[in-house]
Image (cartoon, rainbow, N blue to C red):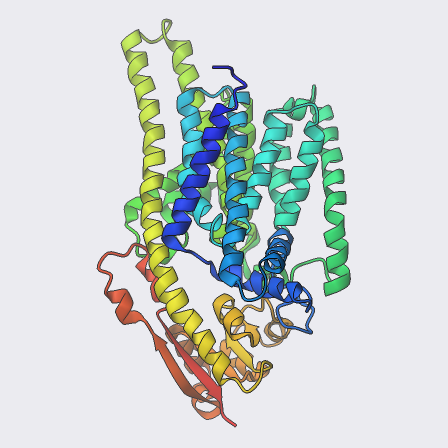
Length: 540
């Protein structure tokens, strides 16, 4: 077969699309944060501005491309076609995942991967639980993966326009998430250290110039959004970032940075999220699942192997940098990890390929044919085991997500929101709540969400009285409270009179019996968090 044949790329595209579509049809997943973004997008499509609360210019979302695409699709689909808009968004995101798989095949060619290593490369992409979940549930992950793959393609498989391709990748990462520069910068730094001929450069200084030029062009391509957001919202930073940043001041950054190398080595013990199912650390999963976290160790430390391929070492160093960012510098949610996981998958495929080539080089001088055959079989088995284990975890995660979508998301959070909408005196009624997405979207009321993704009032109150919910409620004086059992217990411990003197329980929403009816449910502990809510109404 011609080494430049498009057949393998087309096959990879088809497998990725089929895998994501099957996952989506089975789970029907609509992630909580999709509704945070979609609320603003729908307002824009209706002419009320890109805002969560009409009349309040607050950027409650973090992905410009996600919000603008959802607004465009809402305008195209027409009013009150929310389910259709989500499926159209899924289609674009799944297509982006398919193109990511195509780019990976070309990257594998440039790395001279053998067929078995290419199977690891594409296989781990199309069976990863978080990649499939967050590329199909309304999040911006599919586009982030595409731009990471485009950056890898520009660096590892450069064409005549490698710098322009890298520029588009850098800009796309920023349009996807405000921390996109972390992923782009980590890849550039990894190549400067270990692969100076990346992007078609002939030397390290030439590569540095190419990266600087690409970053400048990428910044220029991102500048329109940056300038508009600054003018429209009064800040180029999403308000969600501002709200979450209040927690960073409490982190022992120096200690965590110094201990990071040991933390990386201990990935299976503390449950590094990169290759594990979403929110695995909440509990309800067998301990054996943590074995997949060993992939994080290989991907994070492979740059230290002197005889490894240049591309694999560069990708490994980039993976380590992004993993440090996600585990130390920011309170990361599971949908932050797939972009780093993609770089880690490239490392794992490169490591597999290096193993095959080392065996081939040793056959004869150091190994007889039988020993070489056994070692090759061992490397193939390890690669197949990684893909098979990831697939098994993803099947379980898909079942978990299917139940979560039906029982706790649509069966509980959405029901809370619809009831609030009927009970509120006006759309200006305010609601104190932690899970913002479903409850904010379907109630369409004023949200005082914790930690304040859509609420400047919440952020101001946290700065004034701290993170104690009882003090925040007294400070904000919302019309409604939507609380879980643990949240009520904390409030009562801090301020025993608050929930009885100032508020009265209006309605309880409880699906715990439905959850108990599922005898086998991986990740059950995550679903139990949202099994019951009590809605309180402020006394007049």
